[in-house]
Amino acid sequence: MTTHLKSCITLIALFVLLSAQPQLWAQKGGSILPTVQKHKQIYAMSCIPSSVEMVLKFNRKVGTGFYDFQQQWKNKTDGSFANFDGKTIHGLTFTHRFKDRRSPDFPINRLFATIDKELSEGRKVIVSLVSGPSMWHIYVIDRQTAQGDYVCYSRAYEDDQVLELTNTKEIIRQMRGTDILTYTSN
Image 1 (cartoon, rainbow, N blue to C red):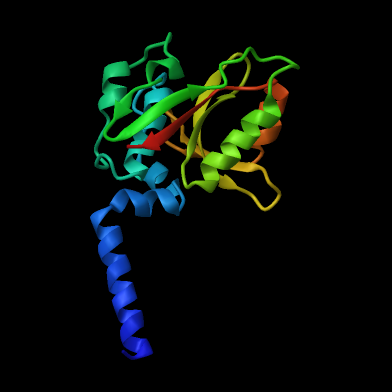
Image 2 (image 1 turned 60 degrees about the vertical axis):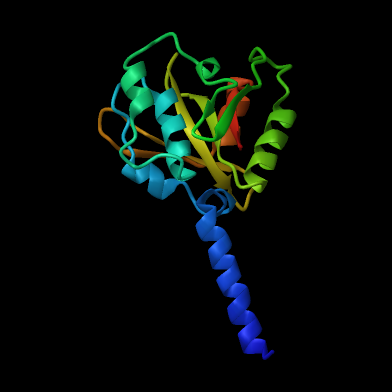
């Protein structure tokens, strides 16, 4: 068999494998930014379910018009990552992690190691970050910068802007910790 023929067969086999399992293609590479750009946060207080919807869309588990969780949540003010903890949704199981009290004793190094591991395995991480005085917003951590910080994205409700942060670790350190929502594919 010629080298050219072997290369063609290998490429065809790879294409068939990725076509049969599109979630592998989505999880193993690429930025979530195009998904975030097409997504909307439809209620002022629906950033938690909005972020879950973005992760589901990125992993090709739901279509681009999927807003079911925000429609159910609306402007709920007493929700948290706990609402999705342990839930399997369209083949992704979500886990609420680092529920520790924010304090100087918060295990920040362990949190960052966990985020690093998730990103290295091709998964995005949903994170709760302070956003103004006594306000919170939810972001999706997309990747690490060359300097080791995290780039994360979200959507603004009022002006429909894509929000981008590149100093995520600094924000988390100033907050003295935070919780995250991770997922695995079933």
